Image (cartoon, rainbow, N blue to C red):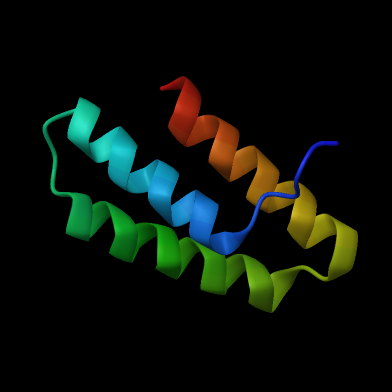
Amino acid sequence: MIEPITEGLVIQAAQEWAARKNKSPLEAASNAKDTITALRAKLTGEEFEQALDSLYREYNES
């Protein structure tokens, strides 16, 4: 079973991305939180879950 992508997993992925790119993990986490907040304000339900999944994949694939 595949677990759903949570906000915490997205923030963790952002921090790991920052570490790989020699950037600030704290700044990456803050930016991810801001992005999540903006997505939550614009999207609901499944759309929000899909956006979280997309953001998570973006951090992991770059």
